[in-house]
Image (cartoon, one colour):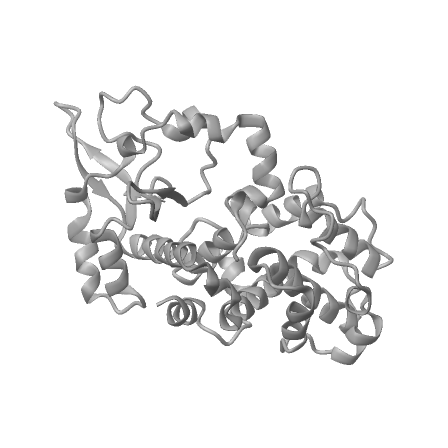
Length: 339
């Protein structure tokens, strides 16, 4: 099963400070629904676009399984709280929120506020149109649809095609995050960090058990020194598990992962590699919008989709350079899995 945002260290710390749950409980989300006639023509025009999942996305939005919202601007001037994020301190870099509809089904509130805005009649102050670039809308809808399918079909997390695709992409990106810490001349260390990051993603984000995660990690073409890894990798050769003793209140997988890295590489100390330093390093590479993608499955997948479509929300230039090393088309492969 894919991990939840509430199971991540960074979101938990934010919730302890701002109490998102209480704040959101006072919000009428319908105040932030973008009126359907403001966007429906754009959505129906997707039929002519040569991108994956277009017909599925159209159906999901027209049937209100995915609901476009703008959390930065209420849909009526009479609403007391015009900016939901300002009132609740809800992070601006969460693009898809899961809620239950009146039928008890999971639906996705797709927040377009980072890239879209209302047009307002200067005389009446009434909203009359929602402006957003078509390509950006396609990317945000694609990420929302994938989140919708993964939320409603949790067994997909057990699909090796899915967790192998995403875990290898995660490890490829994390290779670059860790590269300043590693010995530059060691092929074994480079292979080992890829295996460890792959395994972290598979275990923590997808709920895959350690042995299976390592089995698939070893197959990665980026683990070039497989014999060296099997001979020297502490995590591979012991029963230590990064998810052991995690209470998701004081101890999180990211804490154990950082300690594991320090154990694996004697020249890396906890002063260099700890959750705070790792988050900062990650933010430096991909900017603050990527913060939750370090730990959260659906946020990471959303980042991959945005990068593929060239949406300038994360550090797209770096992401595309790293992912170009992989031979796969992330969105096309994801589409074939979740369709």
